[in-house]
Length: 429
Picture (tube, one colour):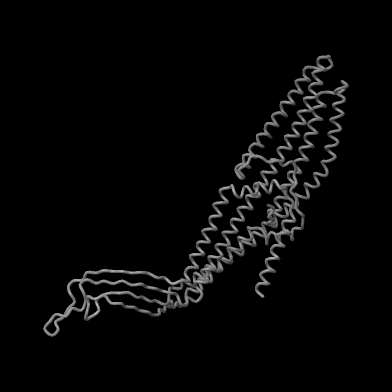
């Protein structure tokens, strides 16, 4: 029956994990970069070592199930002789050279649950260490994804700058031709060159920012290359209540907070056992001299017994310790309530950002078309000699602003979806 229950639980867990992954769409390159970061970033290795430490601690605690065996040997030179007159002679009761050697064993026969409680406490520590590793990986994945889409944004922004510069350079050629024909002024050429210089500086700034993001990518993953070209991160949207419920179940901040409650509960269980008695076995076997009447001879000896101890009074320290642990449990439970309140606010904000940016993107589509149409018209007017450099500059600026605005909204939408995914605790790597 137990095997069936375990199998069913495992199946449900797998289905839940599969369902969570199916809610998020992530491209293969980003998954690969995140996977690289787990093996490259030193902090992950550092935290993973705490799992090994916690496992060793559990192994050490479990070894308390076995008896302790020691080997002892001693020598003592004793003076004066221990002797009394007997029948006219001096009879010696103890040797001058005292020799002994023995094997000793002790074993906890009944500890009233102390060992099992300590093992459970070590298991809780191990579980917390594993969840801390998962949490570090989750934070690192979020950081890598942010850097990745920052790179996509900056590359797209540079592409927009290139199109603006190409447009301005083409119109510069027109102005230069008109200047030769006497239909344009020198100031027109200077103005358009000034616009080109400004756009070149903006491009340099974007390239500088891009290089910084590539450096961050190298810092986290060990590679400086990302080929992403679109904001393709997506998540199935839900309402605030459902999202908060998922966060409380899957987000590692909540999982770790629950682990701390379990730790405190295990510590409380240990504290309650402190006033229980302890029953142990002890035994020893070896050789020693000093047995009368042949005190110099080494003789085999052994002993076996039972020890019993029970705490009687410790000034109330145990009860105070229990109160302390109960308060720690309460404090951790209150921390989860505070965490829920914070996450509810953050989820509401993320959903608002998603809805707002979706609406903004919809509205900017028409603005870009209108700006491009005005740009074409200004170019035609300039070619025909009826337009001015100012019209070209304004048209170019309007197209650039509209394109960058849409790009920023798409970028912000992607980041909002990424934030919502993080809050709900989805593993998208």
